[in-house]
Amino acid sequence: MWKSKLFKQTGICLLIVLAFFAAQKSNIPQLNRGSEAAVAYLSKNYTVSDVLTFARDSAKAVAKAPAAVTNAVLSAEEGSRYGEPIDDVKNGETVTVHAVAAGTVSAVGENEKIGKFIKILHGEDAESIYGNCEEIHVKELERVKKGQAIGTFKKEKNTEFYYRLSELN
Image 1 (spheres, one colour):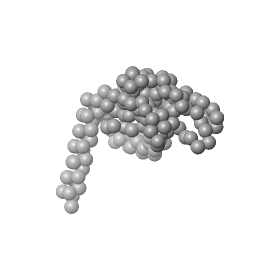
Image 2: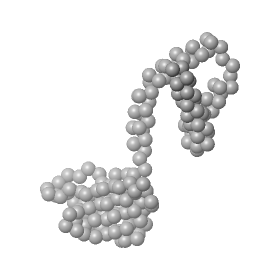
Image 3: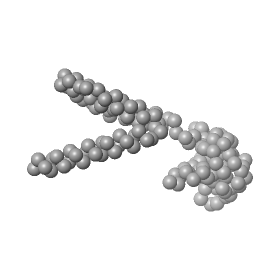
Image 4: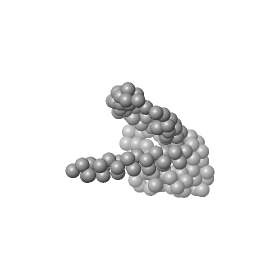
């Protein structure tokens, strides 16, 4: 039984060491700071009192982790690389349609399902489609910038703005 436990602990230690080395090789500032802190902790000679204090402090930090993770996710969503295609619109109002990210207009057309539409390819990462446009201000193969006006949409009783963003990877 103790051999099995020792084997599991050794495996976990190896995973931690691999994660540590991966963090050192990354260009992510948070991981770099974390690995630097780990090196500083490991290079110091600790007493039993130091270890107990560290354990208590770590337990407190772990207890706060769920809130920190939630805050990080919320702040990441606020800084999304994709913008909003239109502002809120009321019946009878016409608003400008904006490109949610830089890209190339891959199609402009009209069909029964989404009316006049614009399709933009955002590199190899994503594709956006804007439908039920009243006017279209771009042409196929035209390069657009994030936030650039690409058309207009008029809100009417039976017409909703059509928008789809598809991640390609």
